[in-house]
Structure formats: C-alpha cells, structure tokens
Length: 148
Image (tube, rainbow, N blue to C red; front, side):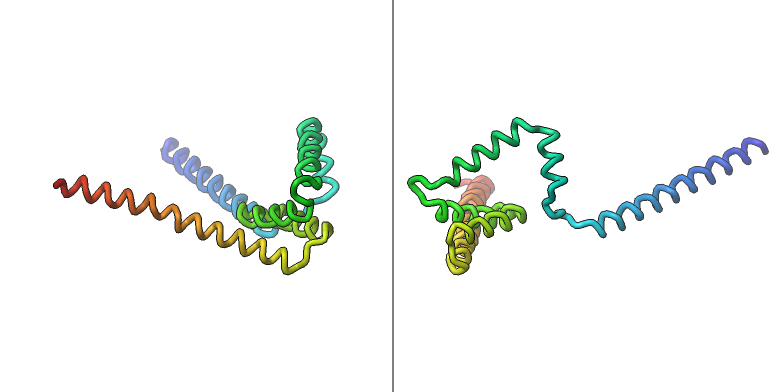
C-alpha cells in the first residue's frame, strides 16, 4: 500500500511538473509572440556586436565602405542593386538600410521600385528556369520505368 501511495505521489508530481512546463512554455510563447521577430536596430545591439566580435565587425564595415564607394559603377547604382538583392534575400534590415542609402545617394522612388521589380522577375525567372530540373527528372523516371 505504501508503494501504491508513492506511485500516486510520483505520478502526481510528474503531472504537476508537466503542468508547470506547459504553463512555462505557454508563457514563453506569449512573450515571444509579443516580441517582434525582427527587433529594431539600436545602439545597444550595435555595442553588443562590437563587444562580441570587434575585429570582424571593423573588417565588415571597411569591406562595405569599399564595395559601395563610387567606382566603375556609381554608388547610387550599387545601392539600387543592393535594394534588389535585399528583396531577393528577403532581409528586412537590408531592405530598410539600402532603401534609405539609395535615396540618400540620389535614387528616385521610381528607380527603387523598378529595382525591386527586377528582383521579383529574377526570383520568378529562377523558379521557371529551374523547372528544367523537374522536367529532366520526370523524363529520367519515365525512361527508367518504361525502357525501350
């Protein structure tokens, strides 16, 4: 009888632990749901990036300045390319940052929108072009299952 009581107590303890985990998970889920997926950039985040990896950050910043400097392509063209690529990679930080940088470099809103349409066409075009892989695979499977 003592064993039965202990089993019930252990089962009851397990049930309470499960209930606590469920409540904790729900609370965490609510907290996560209330928190933005992409937090705004901030000085605090910038400081933390620098604190955690100062050398790579400095190297990246230098690389970025070199890439976007006027060269064979003017900086405004490079920023329009960056806006298009940012939409293709779907990076919200890049979209915001490079849209602002393109405007600052002298791009018009119409140029920015055209660059975005180029990105959309390239993404759709990639899906269309890669349909050749599916067609080729279907032909291979058909040939393998229906030998001549």
